[in-house]
Amino acid sequence: GMLHNIRTYREIEINDETQKVAQIGVWERNIQTADIFWSNELYRFFGFVPEEIRPVNEVVWQRIHPDDLDLVRKAYWVAVNSGLSYENEFRVILPGGGERVINSKCQVMSDETGKPIRSISSSRNISNLR
Image (cartoon, rainbow, N blue to C red):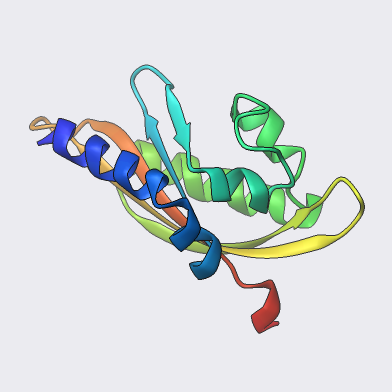
């Protein structure tokens, strides 16, 4: 059930070292309440100290390369409204001017009526594969 899934993601966060090594970050969003959870590694991908900010869209989008932002926004809202999963790639601009390339996979969960209720995403830092 849903609680089990959320607990699973909390366990992933506890396994912070693994995420660092694997260069994977995780986020989860409750579409109804807009509550959002980010793993520590995901904060680092975007150049934030873990939990220094509340990772709302407006804050996060400021760190995405302007040429990639439309794509990222569209993919997410289409997924949330349709319940479809997606995968995309985008660049993150770091505060010091550096750049990262992130591969993001997002899955949307729906309730019995087909209404999207939450999204879960895993993001990989693939900068070194470029």
